[in-house]
Length: 415
Image (tube, rainbow, N blue to C red; front, side):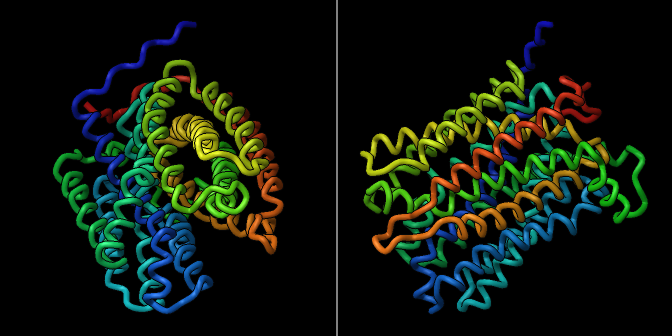
């Protein structure tokens, strides 16, 4: 059967996607900026790596808890109002981080920021699903996912520059001011997203949560989410140390690796989304899985190599990773019913955060460091990532074969 050509975006749809991508950029940047600022924050506030590890993980775990606590209420309000509520709390938390003058105050600020920031991504996905029909969601997810790459290319270097020019507090104030502009635009331009409120609602938030976490197809999707997240978070925490100590790449050249990788991902993300809509989301996911498995096995077995080769390997590996994540998010968006999208996405975001934390801890128990600085058993991490990728593919195949390939247009569509 010949596929129907995907319709073009309307003017309002383009505005919506741009706003949602901007919010994702702000939230991801706030999470990612902590690691490069660690070298400045620790001596200034006079605490060590153990305390800094708590500060970094506090955001992830509080975001995970927040997702579970919010799930029961996520479908009871206009999604625009819900988004603005949590985004306001996120901006306040970011300002609090900039005002922190001790380990305790910074830890509390990161917990507060995680409680609000951790829910924003799930509301963004629910809005994307409400406003765009399935045949357009590959492109939507591709554009929104470029926020991750943009935070690497634009945000992190800017944050480090501001910190070097003034102090580590300034990047947080700059992020809050920059993020506030996005919040004002959403309040002004985004129309109410409340079509789900016209459907019958469950009276009890607890039962709404219970019915979401016990639905069989949701559980399959949650398992895939956890497995895909596990793979990424097992590699990422040790990548810098592995590049420097095992591959022999100088610290001064690390920004080049991330800059080129980020630029490549910004360019390729929308193309992956288009391909997912044009030739099939699961087909693109299979391609991404095969490519990422191949590149992970190559990456985790590399020794001393020239910079250009590392840039090439790293860029192709991220193309594989994004070729999995973008079509998976598009497939996942077709799983929940309209009245359960908020709770489904909140739980999914919670699982991402918690699985990421667990994966980082697990990788820390696998990888050891030799006296000369070399990381040992990093190849074992690669094998674990391959195993989780294959299992995730099997579960997603079971999930997607029972889903409609093209659902009917949504009752509330962006125009």
